[in-house]
Length: 124
Image 1 (cartoon, rainbow, N blue to C red):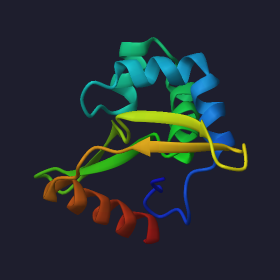
Image 2: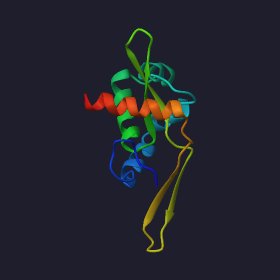
Image 3: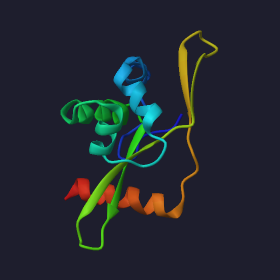
């Protein structure tokens, strides 16, 4: 099981199920073909921007979406959201307890740098 950068331990099964049970969250996952800002997602998915941030938080808490910070040439930054999984699998373990596995995409050096920048930004 993978874990969210900055979050201790694996994602919580209930958080994953809650996020995937939400129709708006599923729509966001379907729309996120490429990195997008919250306002781009809001427009594309026709979800009000105030609700979009709540849904992105739900997906982020479940380790299904990640924030990527782009530093622009003018010194400002833009936050874009990307899918953090290729596949989610539920299964029963040997004790007949539900287990979740998340298949994650490979990370490029640029993505790792963006993640480090996001962490630095959170700490300041």
